[in-house]
Image 1: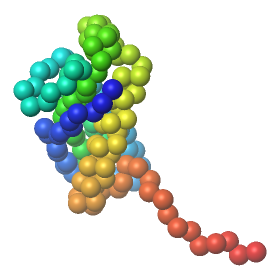
Image 2: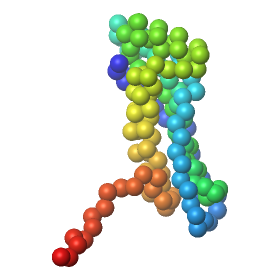
Image 3: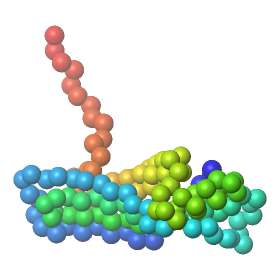
Image 4: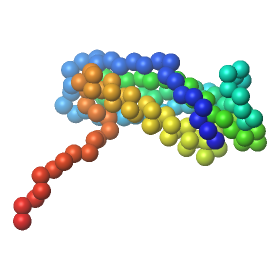
Length: 137
């Protein structure tokens, strides 16, 4: 399975009010559609599968939201593509395909969300590594 393309088609970030005392940050990944697609620009013997996704970060209660959505284009062997499309008719995905989608979305979207959080002066939804002073003996 190869990732052929990835793009965002919606990026939004919004601060609703002042930061509350008890801030809770949650993230969500959703796959809303999977379908077979064709491309005149991409020549491959494998089948092309397009997945629509959304990635959200919520700062509760009602402090801020980040919303990203887009498409991922995968090249899959014909038998795997048929399996994915068959499972999607039941709104399910084969486990290996699901992991691939979620990992690609997480990697690309988390980085974009971190950039937006920095620009909007929001708390980061993923803790970054920190240096600490060594403890004295």
